[in-house]
Length: 292
Image 1: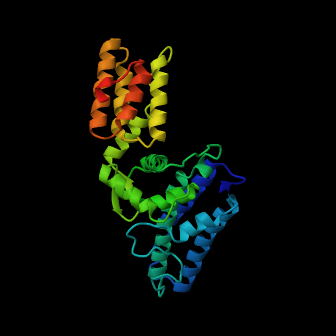
Image 2: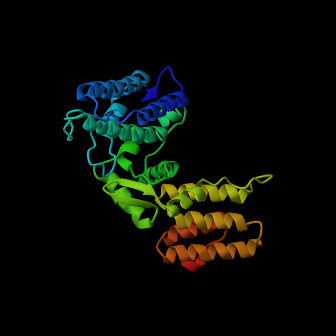
Image 3: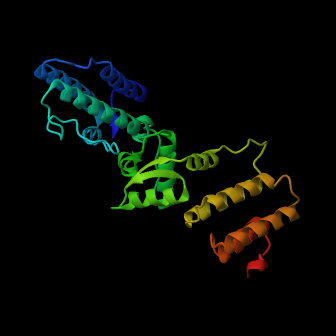
């Protein structure tokens, strides 16, 4: 799903303009119902045609989201005239347009974190559960606010496959870690703790004149541990602390600190003893007899 004949900024801006125009429409008090219904239909159709004309090859992804956008706890998710609210007056028609605008605003938020639309040159490589979790947290971080968003919609729009029930499990796991606030099912918004985690993880390394050999080894360790499924925040934080202290401690003191951290991680069963020994041997060239 990509944009055609328009820049992301212009596409995004025009949709926000449509939402603002709807906000500025009059209340239609005592107006003729049929006239108001035609006005509402015309406005909705204009937005739908605009989206369809600039999305290829599957505009239905956004049009379907727009019509049935999962706005959590909304009394009626549909803006269709055949929806749950009877359109027996101008007031109901105004309410129908208001619901459509809620859908439009929420859809705009989802668009803002859909990489193929906002950053078409960005390659997405998300396969493991850990990668999916971090991907979702990064997207929720960008949407930091009072609203909850569907994890399944985030993955769907970014063409990331997931099995039945997986997104609800992800929401539950992230909720237990304190990284998101969840309203149930797979709806979530990032918590302060989750935002802090993302900020730490995405924090650029301090610039140095030259990356040390140990820095490269620590990067390799992080990469390998992630591939092995050891993606916990505590491991990431411990390695970053070791990185920062490499220039402040003697080699012997740093090795002792590393040994203590690996021992603690192994005792807490965050990594197994073989992995701890391999890490120690790789970083220091010595054997970790303590764990053997």
